[in-house]
Length: 512
Image 1: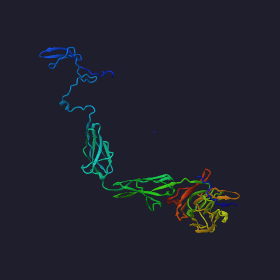
Image 2: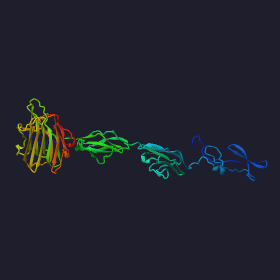
Image 3: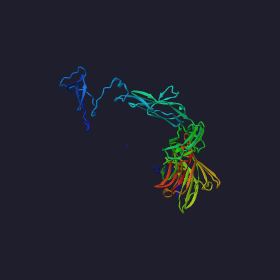
Image 4: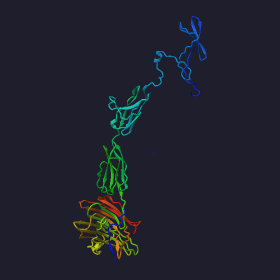
């Protein structure tokens, strides 16, 4: 004979001079000392660059015979020419400025008035000449040009802004300034048109997201409308039955760090303006959790609190059996075992015995030698029959040192039943709560883990816990851990992500 026991404590959790150009020199006029008398006056012979000219000398002028007089002609380097001295009248006439002379700014391009729709970009441009190059400062008048205000940082020849209806009729001018003076452009008027009000229309729906726990989830949406609509994100934790406003989520993209407790939550954006409201379709958040590995458990365990009660429902799966093979699977809920040496649990079993399917219900106080030596207690098939498809509801609770384990089978194929038992046991740590599919340990002369029966899948629902503080909630209300069952490198069974509200999941068979 062999004996079955849960051996339910979790096992093996692995958790970036120029050539050709004359040299500069000052040249002079040479006047010969020989004088000639012609007519009534004296003439001197003047030689300029090899040419001889007669120049009348002033009355009484005399030149010492043999002497030379030099006259500075201001010749330009390399270009022989004689500079004439301008009269005062000539000097006052306008002409090309001398080198380094400042010239006041002169407008060369005036800004044009603009007409744009509210929310569009308006641009004004102007230009001016001058020396030195003038700087520019744009100014605005909001009272038909009576007063002007400098626009901060508007110091380029083009000034652009996003127009709003409140700026309709404003005037803009550019002031050009340099060391010689300043000049102001004509004023250009901004006309801002406002379209007729229209209710928001959704133009981009948010998409559902799947992210790992601790990663960033983002939802985005967009809508048109006039005036431009505001946006507010909302969340539903109960499959859309009710919606809650998310504080501060008022941008078209809402991002946050996802936790496993948010798995299944839904998100929508509500766009509002004076003409109406529009709401996007909901988008679902799926949060995946990297499971720890166990050689005998697959499912979820809650920890980080003192647990006084645990419960859930599931449908008994149908096993697929190999010819003459023995294989086992147990579906249960319980307290302790994830991080302690005892387990208080009850559930069902779907096995293959010599190739034939077998189903039963059981409870176990693992670690309590007073209850069947700490092994499983199978309920009588005659008074507590179990069939595939039966809906099972189970609970485990403790008050003081008294444990109550209860199972209800809501069968439609045979008469339903309820079983409950009270057991006194003061040793449990009450440090975890579990929802598990297990391959039990089979003991004859020695004990070993059984082959896992092909149970297909089993879904746990309505899963909840109650802690010592009186807090009652689903699996996700506490620190939850997903566990997958392995045999070395072979994956035997794996739990899916927690469903909406965090109160259920589906566990799936992978291998025996």
